[in-house]
Length: 250
Image 1: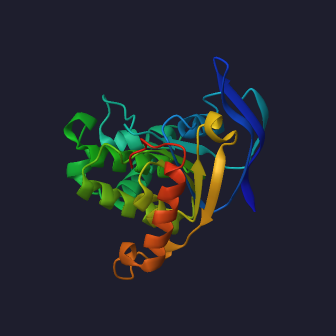
Image 2: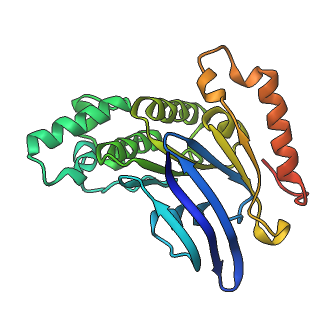
């Protein structure tokens, strides 16, 4: 069953065409990854889906019960501690119930206990803030989660931990996720469907290739990145990304 349907989407910045008749259907429970060059419209597409930007034309049919948008820098309220940040959207519920729900989701992202819940954002590492913001999205019960390069500023160890956390959230809570990344390995490890995008002026189209993948269901089986199928598909994706873009670095 589809949770999101985009039909003939058109958008431009100052007469620079970004999307022209873009079509995309997303099924409930999918983990979509948008992979492509800088400037190909990945972040713009998420902002249009979230309602932050308005398309020039085309239709977006959104059947999700709420959308959560997670940026590179998790926008927590600096004057609230973590438990109050996470429970902020539950202000209509009694305080005791708010705190119980917030503590449940803080625990689910590895930030359980009084030490973490009383921390303020300035006292937290980048990974802890990212975890807390994911807990907030879960607490708000958003059905569609949009992730705009949320791990790009993290160190390699924290980044891998966050990837595993997001994967576990997707499996446990049955959310639909759309992730933007420049990391091919990350795309292959997390996604169930990978869409390759190019700037419209290069190919006169936006989505140049699509791959259905299932490596995320094999994470527990040895080192998935060493598998032949993983390496073969990674090489093909890199070949397509580098086409007509000699200076592309990934």
